[in-house]
Length: 204
Image 1 (cartoon, rainbow, N blue to C red):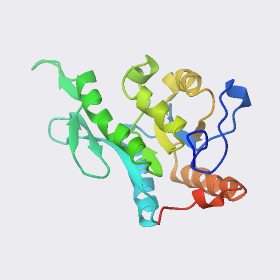
Image 2 (image 1 turned 135 degrees about the horizontal axis):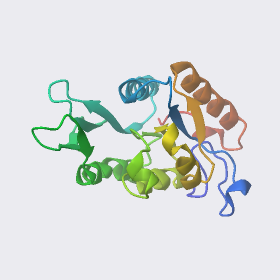
Image 3 (image 1 turned 180 degrees about the vertical axis):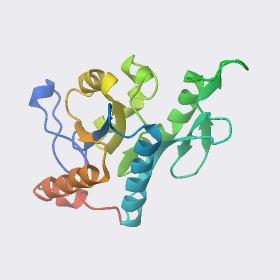
Image 4 (image 1 turned 120 degrees about the vertical axis):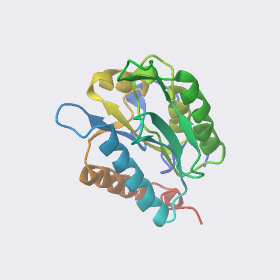
C-alpha cells in the first residue's frame, strides 16, 4: 500500500476535496442532547476494544477525568501511559483549562501510530485547540493522509471547523454505539469491493 492509498485500498489523489473519495475517518458528533465527553470517550474505548479483539492494530488516545480532583488526562490505548492535559486555575476556581503543553506531550502517541502504520487510530476529540489549528490537528490530518482509519469526537460548536480542516472527507456520526458499528460495517463493505481487498482485514 502506498501513501496515496487508504487502509481500504482506495486511491487518494492529490486535488480538490470534492474530487477525493470518502476515506476511513469519522467523528462522533456531540451537541444538545448528545452524550458528554465521558460517554463519548467510553464509546471510543469500547470500539477500540472490540476491534483489538478482532485482531486489528489499534492505537491512539482517550480522555479520562480523575474522580477525585476532576482534572482530565489523556491515556495511551496501547501502553497505558497518562498525560495530564488540564491545569487548575487556583484554589478559588471550580474549573480548569486545557494545557496545550500536555496535549503536545501526548501527541507523540499519534505520531508513533502513523510511523508503525497502525490499522486504526482513535483520537479523543477535535476541540477548541484543533479548530484553531493547534492541539492534535496536525497528527489527525497526518494519520488521514497516511491512510489510517481515524475515529474521533467533535462538538457541534466545532463542526464546521472540523469539516473544513478535514476537507469534508470525514463522516459525522450520531454519538451512539449503533451508529459507530454501522459506519464500521460500511467501511468493511466498501473496502471489500476494492481491488486490493487484503487491506480491509486486520494484520496477520
